[in-house]
Image (cartoon, rainbow, N blue to C red; front, side, top):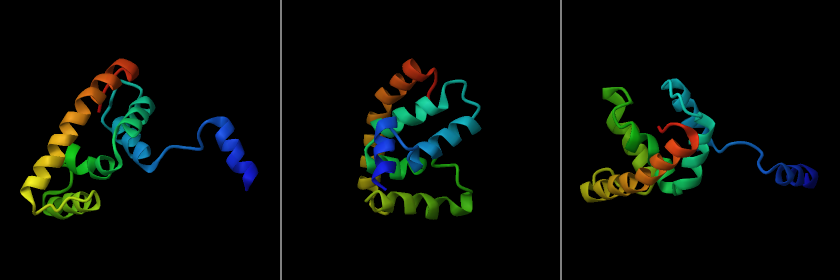
Length: 116
């Protein structure tokens, strides 16, 4: 087992996080012209864990089917530590998301040729 771990360290990585895999998949599905692997890596490195957890609810809040939207997005917000019934908490995480994404979008545009 030590040999596998050492090999991973020597190679620099043993695969993408679940978040990066999701972002790359969404990026490719959207027809993005930029480097989707680069965009996924940049967002994975630049976002704190709680924003990664809530990312779909914050970025694509209208994506779930209308009848599922409240439950799906609410579950993601709860998983990120936010009570979806607390309007101030939801506003706060949305504001944090916007403020964090602004420089990340610029970075992905420069480094990866696009943004998500």
